[in-house]
Length: 373
Image (tube, rainbow, N blue to C red; front, top):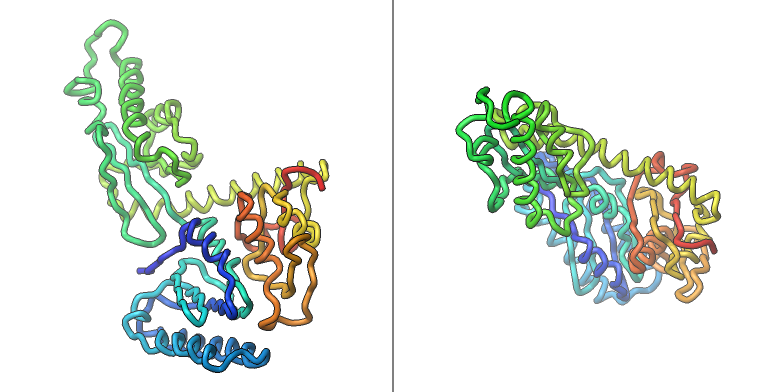
């Protein structure tokens, strides 16, 4: 089992605002198999050594450097910490602070040293957290299941959620064939299904209001289509787990939700790529680093897609966004794409961390602008 802890968007924004004499950002592959954790510990030692060498090269204070390295040594020696891991580990350290995040996605091993954290790899976890609600719906039962990363799925208590379709409409069964006004037979069942679905939708509103978490429907036949027709939650995904959930465990439903989530994320990316092409014809989209940096600094970016793996060292002017590229990464530079993403987030842009094949033109970023520059 993966043990995942992700930063919230507010935590990410707070980390993005950190400025210190030395910020060390390390990302490494880990494993949920406890007996194989030694390889990750060795890798951490190698990456921490690289960070130390970068700080020594710029004459960083030896006592403050020792404070940073002591924290990495302590982590490497913590057997309990390494017993519970996921697929990647993010470590963000200053002489006075030390944060770790266990991530489900596999990241490229990276070490960055600057006056700010390198946060772009964390964007993937925030962009596609693999969290969802599953509405397991049948004529005989309904329940809402919360899936978060690779943690154990949990059934959510929902006030006023009907027990089943028959009791929702005050009947003992929906299979009564005797006429009662127009509500009988298959036509009557559809009417009762809509009543049942509307009660479910009303009960879910207080739970889902204000959220952006995807909702996945697990249902079959007419009941599935009827619920979609009355649903008011805007983040119900198009794909359905097309199986009756009555005899399916929450864990199996969570497993079935993974490909549905992946398909939903890919649809979102494809929609943004189409929007990029549309805005490019209006001079409101760019893959150019310099233009994107200026747009981020002036708050002109509406949506930004960034490659989570690439690092382009340099600096951005605080006032104009002008880029100065560096020949190599060191403690006097930082990732310019990372900084562009941070400035875009600070101005309210939607920022997604993706893989390079999902970027228009295969560049390091793609920006959709609020207005032409």
